[in-house]
Length: 331
Image 1 (tube, one colour):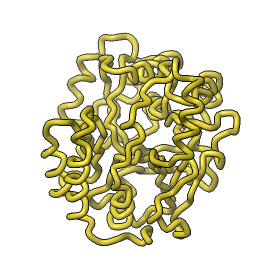
Image 2 (spheres, helix red, strand yellow):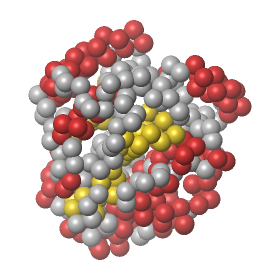
Image 3 (cartoon, helix red, strand yellow):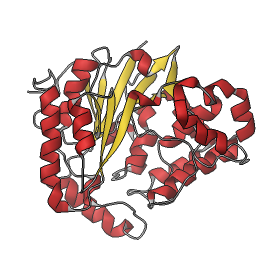
């Protein structure tokens, strides 16, 4: 079974990109949300992502590196396993240029030569221990966790998650979904996380889904199916050059296949999400150094610009300790 990896990247320091962003933000600033610096801030650790892939996932067929047009100077773009994919290579022209991750995510299935089964990484997710094909796919089905959640709005992005759940409630009956796949919703692999699902059963509609904030296994056919039935909503999102509170996100495709039961239950402890904050990030540094998880998400949640460089340097020292050698993807 062929499995590809997809990772998007943007060079927030590229002056040409910055100028284009400023030009379009002037038109869309009233509708745009979440255009802060940390959306595009470079942590200078992308090379550790490639080292993790080469060391711990050598079985991957191809890496599709999605970019506005720029690439890191150190990246060996001619590597036989690497496919450099510019936005115009797969996103319909009427949606370009885009400065939102949503049009990118919603059109991933259009990437040329993308395998049917693929894993989507954000550039803040890393492989820090050996992973296998069966960590992502079993019997041609994505591995995932089905869990109910009660959405609690804490930021503007919460609008987008609500939009995703609205679409699921429009097309699926919650009780029937869970009854038809009871063993997938209440799997021993989930451990104590099943408690929240049990407590939310009385609600007649979906109130939200558990999100692990880790790499997600997808099938192209899921994207194609959702585009067939929700083309207008997806089209509206793709026409927003910046994130908007009316958007849908790529998480919709994950929720959709969970609702259809097209997944295999997995242990959520395969990875860990860490929000990088201004106070104490020792648990993240120790998790990297100790290689406690197969997958790690180090999400940029810093508010104080003055802390950025010191925290970045400490995190990268941790990565350097477990990835001291260059990969074949580096010049």
